[in-house]
Amino acid sequence: MIWGKEESLPRAELDELQLAKLKETVKRVYEKVPAYRTKMDERNIKPEKIQSLKDIKELPFTNKKDLRDNYPFGLFAVPKSELVRIHASSGTTGKPTVAGYTRNDLKAWTELVTRIAVLGGASREDTAQICFGYGMFTGALGLHYGLENLGAGVCPTSSGNTQKQIMYMKDFGTTLLVATPSYALHIAEVAKSMGINPSADLKVKTGLFGGEGMTEPMREEMYKLWGSDMKVTQNYGMSELMGPGVSGECLELCGMHINEDHFIPEIINPETGQVLPPGSKGELVITCITKEALPLIRYRTGDITCLMYEPCKCGRTTVRMENLSGRCDDMLIIRGVNVFPTQIEEVLLKTPEIGPHYEIIIDRKNHLDTMEIKVELVDDTLLDSYAKLEELNKRIRGSLKVVLGLDADIKLVAPRSLKRFEGKARRVTDSRNL
Ligand code: DLL
Image 1 (cartoon, helix red, strand yellow):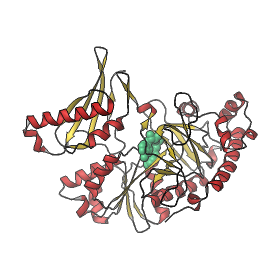
Image 2 (spheres, rainbow, N blue to C red):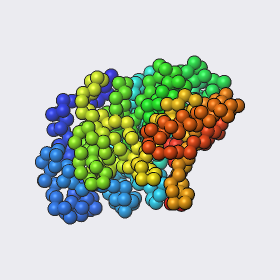
Image 3 (cartoon, protein in one colour):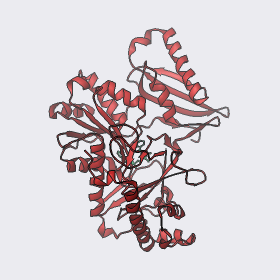
Image 4 (cartoon, helix red, strand yellow):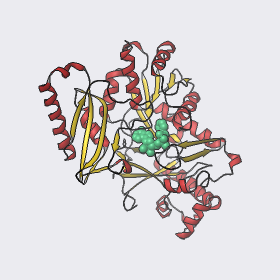
């Protein structure tokens, strides 16, 4: 099933629709948002300059700093009285970034998340458990309304209290799980420690995961724990842009379909700001073309991906974004080498003796960057053999060296000894600037 007719429009029709909405949005922000008017005037761009989709590159970028400088509501294009919901993204430094929604924005958001749920194989027959934290985070309420709109039964269990989550899962016959991928793995692990085999004793057959990346080995880990017949997809979004609902994988698992009738994506070189041709990897930039409250223009997401325009077997014509390689600001520079934590994860999770939990600790000793990676053994069997542990340590180190060109100090730790996360996992500690 395809939920929205706009998901399978011929490209020419989609272009036409995008251009009309882009023109309207640019005119509106120019008239209603002083910060945009100033930026556009500085570049001598009037809304009439936008005559084709290509002209989007004339418009100024927006970034997190613009949102912070205009905290909380300065970039909003409607008066506060029009807002019916406000969310915020915590961020790690400074003020949060704030997102507001009018009644129409909420309607659109709900529809877009329903599309994402359908893409991932959800149906009205599902009993869905939302294990994202309810609160200012957009994940929980976003998925909640999208799934209700589809007609699924929604249990807002929120995050945490994992044993109780599992009790509900069992007693309610939950069939669909919404969580960050790391929390989904943790739930399965706790279930096992309670004597419950997630694939045999629970009914969860669909996982809609998002809010953080899920690499392919991590997806394999999901199949191992939750059952090989589970539909495991991930979806992407950002609070500033809307929350979940920007894009999601279909069951063909070949990238995340972007809801292009609401968002225009571009890929730029993060250093020069230059727009890159289709197929190139770079920073994702998104323009919101239907939002009433917060229509961000050319928002620099900081996320690294590439766009794929070839038709998808699922029948949708919307462009797909490759699963993220990381964020521009996730990129670690270690002894001059650019390293994304996802590259490390790919190597680790291909090693059968270790589980999906790890910690990367970067430091500087005697002016030299050091990288320590703590990885957890899957089970206790290796702990008795020093020789086997040494062999494993060497093997992981060797594989990392091949992929990263860097030497890392590997610490193998006992099963279940590393910290677990109920929301987004934080696996990297960079102590160099502390
Ligand atoms: O994480 C919105 C969301 C919630 C999307 C639930 C999907 C499901 P923020 O808290 O503002 O919003 O964080 C946005 O999270 O820029 C990415 O770096 C990261 N992120 C979100 N989804 C994915 C994903 C929500 N599927 C930031 N893969 C984004 C990789 C993701 N990273």
